[in-house]
Image (cartoon, rainbow, N blue to C red; front, side, top):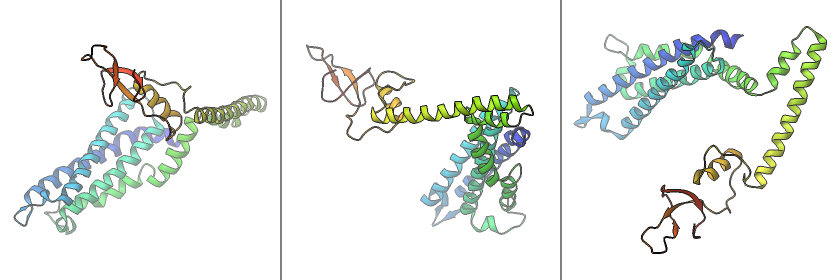
Length: 264
C-alpha cells in the first residue's frame, strides 16, 4: 500500500527536481570554471576540476535518462512502485553528489552566503529531497530490497496473500500450493546451478547465436573456467587459393565460432 501510493509522486516530483538541480549545477559550474582564472588560465583546464565537471555531467545525464524512462510508465496509467523507489533513491543520491562537486568547483564562492551566491541555497535544499517521500535509508532497505525481492520472487507474494485470506480452508489450500511451488523452485535452481557450473553452461540457452552465444550463455549461468579455450571470430580468407577460413580475433565478418589455432 505504501509503495503504490507513493509511486506516482516519486516518479515525477523528486526525480524531476533532481534533474533540474543537476543541470543547473552543471551549467553554473562549467561557466564558472571557464571564467574563473588562476595562474593565468581558466580553472576548468585543471585536471581536478575537469574530473569533477565530468562526474557532474555524467550524473546529470543518468538522472534525466532515468526520469524519462520511468515517467513513461505513468503516461500509460501504470504504478511502477518498485522502479519509482529505485528512481527516487538513485536520482536524489546522484543529485547530492552533483551538488557536492559543484561546491568543490566554486570553493569559497559557494560557501559565503549572499546575493551573489547562486549555489549555497541549493545545497541546503538537497537534504529535503533525500528525506521526503520515504527517506533514502528506508527506501533502499524496505522498498527497493524488501519489496523488490518479494515482488520479483514467483511465490513469496502469493504465500503472503494466501496467509491474509479470511477463509481458512482456501487460505490453507493456496498457501500449500505456493509453498510446495516455492520448495520445487528452490530445488530446481540448486540443481540447475550445479549442472551449469559442472558443464560450463554448455546446455543453457542464449538470446543470441554465433560467436556471442557462448559468451552470453556463460555469463548468465556461471563463470567460465580459466582453463577453457578462448572464443575467436572467424574471417574467410579470400586471398588463398584453397579459400580456407582462418580465425582472427576481433573480426565481425563471420558469425561462426572456432578455437585458435584450428581451421574453421
